[in-house]
Image (cartoon, rainbow, N blue to C red):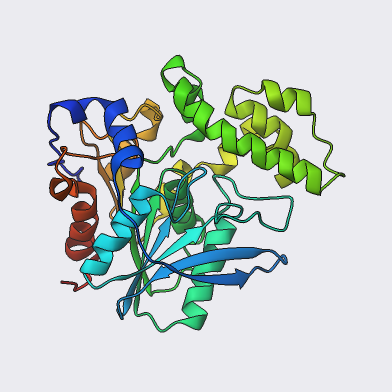
Amino acid sequence: MPLFISDFSPTLPFKNNHFNTMYRPMFMKDTCSFLRKRITTWDNDFIDLDFSLVGSKTLAVLIHGLEGSSASKYITSNSNHLNKHKIDTVCFNLRSCSGEDNLLLGTYHSGKSEDLNFVINHVLENYLYENIILLGFSLGGNLTLKYLGEYKDQISTKVKGAIAVSVPVDITTAEAEMDKLKNKLYMEVFFKTMKNKILEKAYKFPEYNLDKDKLFKATKFKHLEHLYTVPVFGFKSPEDYWEKASSKPYLLKIDKPTLLINAKDDTFLSKECYPLEEARASNYFHLEIPNYGGHVGFMTSFKPQENKWLEHRVVRFIKENIQIDII
């Protein structure tokens, strides 16, 4: 598909990528009254789904990013906006992210698309929706894109399309980007909760022989992957994990209208995370690269009523490209 020319045009302070990235989680006040439904997984664990219902025949499944949840401001804001357009929403809280630790040693990772497949099948089997749309952010966007390509031959026709935002589709190079000094503050925020979760797992599962000294000294995602992701999920190495979890190899397999929005100034993303060739070669996969926006930011100004570009863009794609009739 031809690339979309973005109309995102923020005011001056929001042209700074770090300012735009931090403004939404620090200053936006969006909240949403979710109705929680806990479902039991095939491996005797649980997943918490948070619904916001307006009596629609269309459901948007929202998937948050690394260490996010249904309380993440980009989730609550998009959920509220979709509800205003008469679309039901459900936030898929990844394992361990709903405010309560999951039951198993394993939590989630960037490529664990079998959990998303399970959630969508649960919705299809237990609810009467005619249309399902996926909306994934960052890590959740990678899961969304990987799922659409990986499960292409199994996906219900009721799943009509998807939007993914700020996605590290090439994890190998994105992790190298995250290791740079410019992202040190973000890494410290991520590591605070991630290390605590790993410590809690080691306490609950003594057979998991965690090297706590290495955990305390860890400064890169690769260090945590050596200690946790690789042994717990059965990967051969961090490099094996990066390759198998990345959504980029699946983009050309996608056969439903799908939009990826990655800001050019996203400090988390490498140049390989802007899949121009895949977008040009596909009839279904669309790519939009605004000049500004940061990472899951896309804030326009200090006026709350003007800070809905991303939310409006999601709805416009649903109407114009997925072609679902909504108000």
